[in-house]
Image (cartoon, rainbow, N blue to C red; front, side, top):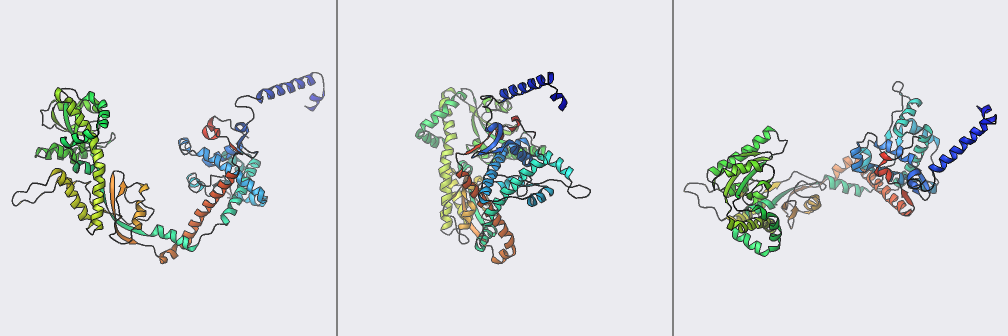
Amino acid sequence: MLRFFRSGGVAQALVAAIAVAIIVIFALEFRPGRGAGGPSLSRTCAVRIEGRCVDRKDYFAAEGLALRGVAPAVIKREGLRAKILEGLVERELLLMEAERLGLGVGEEQIEPELMAGRARVTLPAAEAAKLGPSLGLIDGVRLLQVKSPQTKAFDYEIYQRVIKSWSNRSPKEFSLWQRRELLAERVRDLVRARVRVADAEVFQAFEREKSKVVVRSVHVAKEWVAKWGVDLSDAAVDRWAAENVAQVDEAWKTEEPKFKAGCLLVREIAVPFAKDATSDEKVGARDRLEQAKERIDDGRPFALEARLTGTGDAAVVGGSIGCLDESYGEGAKELLAAAQSLAPGKVSAIVETPSGFHLLQLEAKLAEKDARTYGRRHVARRLAWKFLADEATRKLAAAIVERAKSGAKLEEAATALATELVEQTWGKPTAPAPGKTPEPHPALAADDRPKVSISAPFSIRSNPLREVPASATFAAKAFALAAPDAVHPEPIPARDGWVVLQLKEKEPATRAAFENEKHLWTRTLLAMKQDEAVARYLAQLRAAVKGKLEVDQKLAEDPAGAERDEG
């Protein structure tokens, strides 16, 4: 081959032609303005800090080591590629610090790591403690199988295949990469070494976790108050509508076309089931509605039973859905057929639709002269209960708090005040026949009535009531109560109303129990504070290079479309 190039003549001409072709191709490929701007951050560097370039090979190697086996949907949803990029930024900041401090990693330090199959990848410090284990990393380390299954000794051929598979790097490239990762870890270790935890601090953390309280609570549900404690009579609704004309007018614009002369005015009790409900679930839903129909047949008013058995906004207003037409949605055809066969005041058989079981009562056919009055009142009633119930729910919960604070038992206070509210709206029950036991109003037997619940023991980090959002800091409020029977001074907001809180008992953590677990708690708290220290340290390093940092975000957004190095 060498004689060929030395022979001159045609060979020299051929060599010259090849050289010219290479020059032309190079000029075309890397000319200014080509593609996204010629050689740039996005083509050569994943990260650039103060002129230091982290090659895209590092990104793809880190991605392969950290994200292999993770579903693409999870990678996208959790933004994992962006976190790999952030890890590269942090690693480079730590390497810059290592240079400043004069730190290094020798062959005697990196070789045992490689032979043990310990491959490191830097994850963002603020998330590493949670993110690493979710990716199968232990302290940022992926354990690779580089030993012979037969001899259990390090096998260089296996090592080559494994690191190529995981990172697409040659042994030399992989070693250089891991040397840099190990050096970054040395800087993190220096930061961690400065962290200390005092015995008192550890006991405080133990005490917070291990101390338990048991509470009594009363959930005052807005829907219960709306059904039973808010006056929604025609007169009350008309008064509310007169004071809130603009809101009623706005809602009426949408609803007016439904209220046509001759439409069927219907009340409904609906017991829904899921589209994938089992036959047993459907049987249970039907049984519930059959029991409701039996009570109606025995004389209970339909509107009263709708409040007890029905669900949703219609139940709050006694089952009234106004004009039944095609706008009802799924099941409208079946329900219209059932309603059209009814005489005014009569109740249908149970109707099954794709969304549930239904009972209907036909009130009347809407007369043309009543269309506007009835329609606007129906719209106003649907609006009014939500506004009126807000205030009434808060007032009832506050009244229970005050009565319990004055010394009444919480259960007695809740029952008495709920009874007063129901009687104020519905009147007192009629006297029973001689020899008969008076029956309470159905509202006072409803499952969602205000009543006392007693929690299981819980710690300050728990939330024993699912109806209370985490933002309400329910547990902290419970632990702030000093003595049994103490009541939180005001109602606590719930997702659908308010909760009254009373302490039943408190069991503080003991020093004796702490001594048995002290070592574990010290180690756990120390690790947590070390992670926090590293995260703060890196935040300071990042602030110091503000304006001097560039990151190729395209790698995080669409690496599948990026040109990967096969290196």
